[in-house]
Length: 107
Image 1 (tube, rainbow, N blue to C red):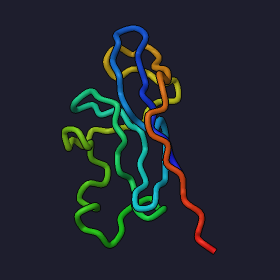
Image 2: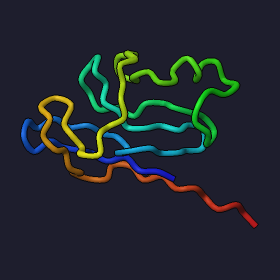
Image 3: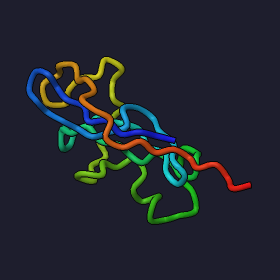
Image 4: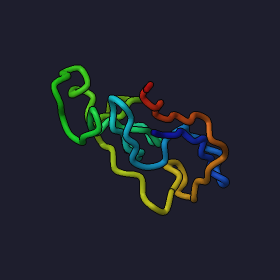
């Protein structure tokens, strides 16, 4: 189950569409992080199939811990104070853009 949010900085106007923390999907585990290489807020792949860390898929393993925007590796978990990666002001949710939920098994 998961959701993506459009977050906005009230100070500089920067926007990012991210989950806003750690999120576990059917095939990927991601965490919202600040990339110090490209200065963006991004969801970084940190695991697969509900578990953090590597798995059997070498293509996905190659992307673990890398920024999906610039492929940089200077990523750190997004601070609980929710700072804008551009100006440091607090970012706030603007709207929910995607909500995903698991479908129940058919009886």
